[in-house]
View 1 (cartoon, rainbow, N blue to C red):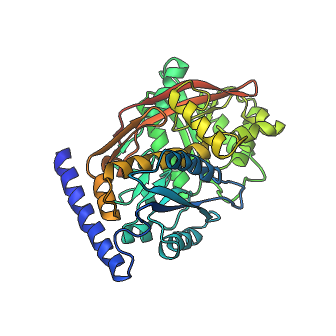
View 2: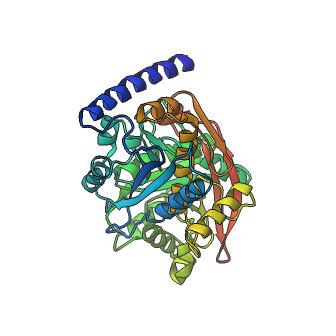
View 3: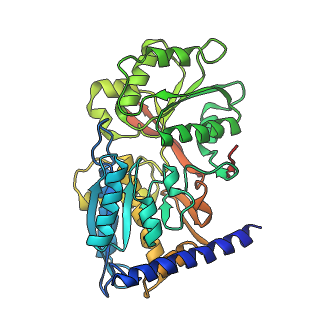
Length: 413
């Protein structure tokens, strides 16, 4: 059954990309837009600035570092990456769409790498044009496409598709089991955050935790002036008492610092965990570091503190490209997105067009790397790769709580 669906999917991809190539040919771009005998043009779209302070700008440094190593090694099939840098969408979908169109139509980018923007608005344009894009697939706009490649798959699967269990299972292993333990999930009212609340709740229940509650009423634009209503719901969610684990599915350190500080003031002594607090920048601010002390972050890549050779190489690449740059989660996402793109370029071969590239990417592509786990397309256009690690902030320093590990997905209910 899976082989039949995959074969049908590839046929659809070839038809769609062939149509896009014909459309491009009509404008004089051709299927090899952005490609010469010696170069490949690539640019990205990031949320460098936003009203809430959330920023993914470090993804540009990570991608650049990986591209520079590839270029130093001679490029891919004799072609070096001409990195155009990354546009800023300001966390605005319309600006993201305009940025994607600029990179493709004006700058002649072959592909968009990295794309790391929660409200990215350029997905429909890139899909229609048959332009590959790589990054962190946090929203539904990535899923079900033939051109969008999340470095860890689709994180917003449709009901019935595979949904990740790794976060819950890693946490259960860390705590010595999930039996008798409860979890509460706090999200904001953004579509991506609310959807994340659904998938992450199931990750924990699949691991054996009891779900004490999910709250998606937190405004996404800015932290609330009063955290008490949210804290009260959490502290009374488990039959009138606090849950054993609180999961935050909120974009932005300011949100998590506010929530965690308020919970600690209210006497919460359970486990706090989220996907964004693995950030060296927070250690520079005493109040932030104090609020996040003891928090367990869940990065979808092998932690920087790991002894894995792939992480040592990452550190060397970044230091060479941008000496003294702190290693951040966004940087890692840019780096691994670029790494997968380069692997696909290599496997596509010397005769490079977008059509050939997408046919390779969507034709039973599998790539395993201890740095981020594994990726498999076309399967991971509709589900996450199922891999992740845990990091704990303890004594003002990050420590590996659980190394990268991959788990089987379960159908999303």
